[in-house]
Length: 179
Image 1 (cartoon, rainbow, N blue to C red):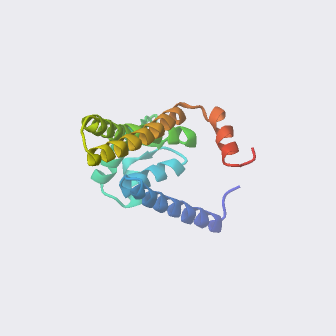
Image 2 (cartoon, rainbow, N blue to C red; image 1 turned 90 degrees about the horizontal axis):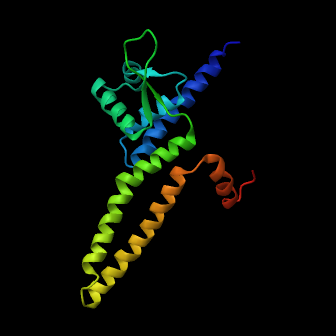
Image 3 (tube, one colour; image 1 turned 60 degrees about the horizontal axis):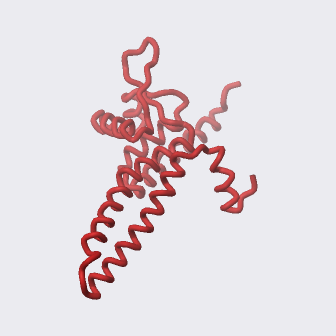
């Protein structure tokens, strides 16, 4: 049974709104809007898409599409797939939300948390033996920040390596949700 025109239009509207808002959220998370929109488009696509299809759907240039697709591949959120009988490159997104979250967590940890943690630890070590109240205050603050960021780092490490089936019930119980 095929979809009614009103259902098709409603689905397209919801899909476009999701892609647009995912792009906005991506900007808030520190990735460019187009990269997030491409990711959203591939997440909700029923089949792998070519660069040309991504360009047409999002009305972006080939260079922009190509660059962002390869960045998404580097993040591990998108993969290039072979479609039998086709010469073009096709791309698909990870559909499993938990795997996607774990991939993002690992990348953010590597790209953001680990460098900050390194700087905090270095600053703490450089000021540990300095005398004076200003140095002691600075040292305590960066040490406390380092401990906090280290805890966040450990939590992200555990979460990104966990199986959904093992961690999800614990998280839901913690949040007060019934399972």
